[in-house]
Amino acid sequence: MSDAVIRIRELKNQFADQVVHEGLDLDVRRGEILGVVGGSGTGKSVLMRAILGLRPPQGGSIEVLGESVTSRSEPLAVRRRTGVLFQDGALFSSLTVLENVEVPLKEHFPGLPGDLRRELARMRIRLVGLPSGTGSKLPSELSGGMRKRAGLARALALDPELLFLDEPTAGLDPVGAAAFDELLRTLQRALGLTVFLITHDLDTLYAICDRIAVLGQRRILVIGERSEVEAFDDDWVRDYFHGPRARAAQAAQGRGGS
Amino acid sequence: MKNSDWIQVPGEPNGRWRLCGDWRLPSVTLLRQVLEAGPDRPQGLDATAIEAMDAAGAFVLLRWTQRCGLDADEIELRDEHRRLLETVRRGLEMEEPPEPPAESLWRSALGGLGRSVLALQANSARLLGFLGLVLTTLLTSMGRPRQWRVTATVHHMQQSGLAALPLVSLLSFLVGAVVAFLGATVLRDFGAELFVVDLTTYAFLREFGVLLTAILLAGRTASAFTAQIGTMKSREEIDAIRTLGQDPIVLLVLPRLLALLIMLPLLSVVATLAGLLGGLAVAVWSLGIPLELYISRVQETAKLSHYLTGLVKAPVFAMVIALVGCLEGFKVAGTAQSVGERTTSAVVQSISLVIIIDALAAVFFMEMGW
Image (cartoon, rainbow over all chains, first blue to last red; front, side, top):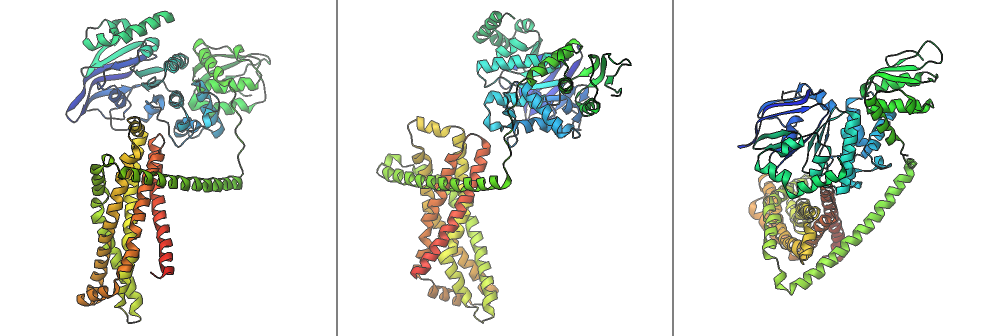
């Protein structure tokens, strides 16, 4: 099962005369968690927005689940099969958590009876480990970590094959971040998800990613398993994976016994 | 129960049922109907033939087996589906607290009324408290020239005063013309068209000059103050000002208040002139009153006392607009949504207060015979 669910060829992204990506190729394999890292301004979020079809690229082609998202029409079939968790959850502030999770179900399965839809939404909320009673709360009443979990519940509402996560552990305390990593790993195994994960968090990277892609110099510098990426000869990559924080994260992983 | 795309019931009575097909979200509606259709209970389940299952399918399966009194462990499943089922089941074991009983409509309406009365009381107390705080800060900082924020004050005078000049004069001119037209329509029947001049003069000297300016500034400036201070509040800039040992009232409120206290009376002078000009334009071009007659008539009617009863309200309005705008800004809590809500509230409050105060003042001046 190593067919590519995301296939990017010769991608070019440009803001005015500032080129963000040029000649970028990337394959994401089915069933893997791909961690995407890169310095600030290397266009990680731009890449994600391009893959989601939110931002038309200046050149190149992107295929998601076998369908092109760079063509003119809105890739609706792809939308149904993907879930996205934005940085702060991006929950709709006027709806309760339960209603937020119901939105994609209502949109894509209008024939679903109301009671079943509510039960399914409630099931997702429990699946992401939110305490009972969270469903009736408004997003503004939740902590940052809970908002991210609620956002994940909404992203999972349609049982997507492909999940996009933009810095899921940013702004969480280490305990919360570790719990979120654990949750992601469990759900990914149970649901057979493919995950595209943007992160700065070395612990997340080491704990749950199958492969790591490093963005830099307008393209993917290197992609592969941890050992391959660490051995890559580039200043930024070396600083990133062999700096003091990386060593601490590696040591923690070693103690964790993984 | 009949055989279907998802269930195959065996011929013999106590055999295991075979589950198969697609147990995913697009088919759960039909699936649930099929599962609830029959009263029979299966003796055992063999689900290894299920081709695809997702969390929604697992959920429906679990609910059904619970209802049939079947243990989920007894279902034969493929390994990957077993993992999924276990994950979903762990989530389902949590108890959902009971929904609070829905309140009856009249009770919640009555409750809402009570809450808004209490909010009005709290809001008035807060506005008065803020007024006191700002006045005492103003008095103490008078004696300390080092606290005077001249640049900021001049900046706000330009932003909320000078920049509003074209708008205020245009709108006052138009309202002046409208008042003259209205008066002419009524007075023509009495052959007293000349009294149009008295009408516009009275109206603009006593009321409209100041009132129009205040309403325009309440919409334009109070909202700007709330948005500015509210954005600073939500980015913790106000807290930063405090921790650096400065007073946000001195830094943010006093320059805005002083700017409005200076500019609103000036603007209302311009508005009065523009309104009289609007009346003049209508009188001369449409009603055929000679220019000289109009001017001499204005000179006869316009008394200083009239103008003072109008102008004396200007500082009060300036105070209301600046205080409401700033206080609503300070009330912003957290998100960008709150900034929007507070801005709306600032405009509504300042315009209402301006009109209420104006009405009270009009009654008072009439009774006093000023």
